[in-house]
Length: 473
Image 1 (cartoon, rainbow, N blue to C red):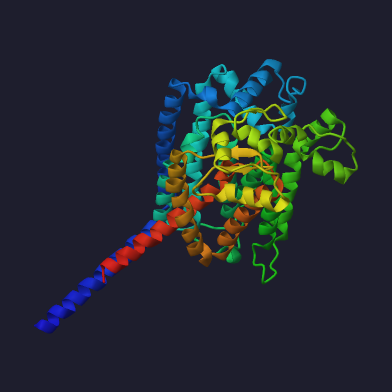
Image 2: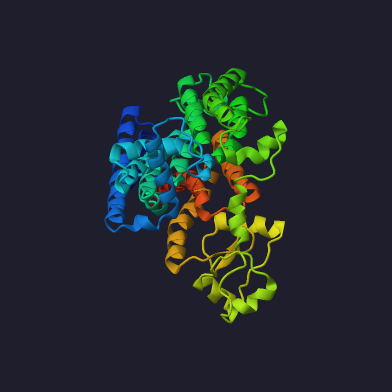
């Protein structure tokens, strides 16, 4: 009798394990209709959170403090006033030529519909921010399980930085959306519904590949920094059949390249007619394209950005004058802020950065979790100091995303193609800012956060599965 009881308990445990295994399979491979509905509900949740926040910002008139957003809003209103899709506003503000057309077009349409009211801009940006949650869910579902996608979607819906920049008119939210949507459609083209590995895919989804090409080209016309990812994406398509086996996918590589060139052509024709020379994407690329095509120009308008940072320069002989209060303006006419003056009195003084110091400064500011003291960035004279609240928010939200995101991406390593794509995007994007963007600030990192949140979903799903197995022991 005792033997039978023991056997019954063993049978009961086997049945329980089988049921749990079946549930796990169902969680991973739900019908697409159900997962699509779930993605929509997460989008709605994210949108409601963002609309609540931007309404608060609008009602309290916080937007008046957003210097960059005031610039973008003014440009939108100027485009509406001029009434031309292929606008020419350099006579109004030369900085308008520094921007690709996508964001100005979005903002101009928004200004035309809502009459230039701040709330209209906030609503449109909130929709874009909620779409980030939608695509984070879909991307996580593509490379992992349904539960991992649910976790990633919920976390992204409440991710503070995605919410905060919803009350804005700038590029931050749109760049995050562009990167996560581009990554999703690129992988979707090579990962079929039966979840085979990319290397063994025999059917390529050219519709998804077309969406990838379209969104990526739009992202280039949103911000030319995305051009650094174009070679990576094309090489991924070419070698997606397996780098070690040399199974090249020539047809999708050529098709994608042709679509991208065709989509880039109209704006390049506009640029040639506008400037009388080859200008790729925006005037900010002139430093590179002029050398390639043999054009000569003594001074670039973009140099004005660095001219501002030069106005902050303080010579070593002037430090004591600032510390004792006998001098408050730099030779460039810039007034030293009270936090910087306090830092200088505590021995944190500016100095001209060497190339190595500048690189390290940009690397640190992109990945920094907590700032112990104020510090200088860019050329060694731009003072940057976080408040305690900013540090706490960074530690809680970004720290959480970084810790579990890295763990999740390491778990994803078993699907080598997806893992390596994620890793190379992060390396190239961060490397671009460290090596080539001297005025890098922390918010330039946010597109990478969207990929980390995919890893968060994978890591927490793995932890929950591990705890469930331990509870049955």
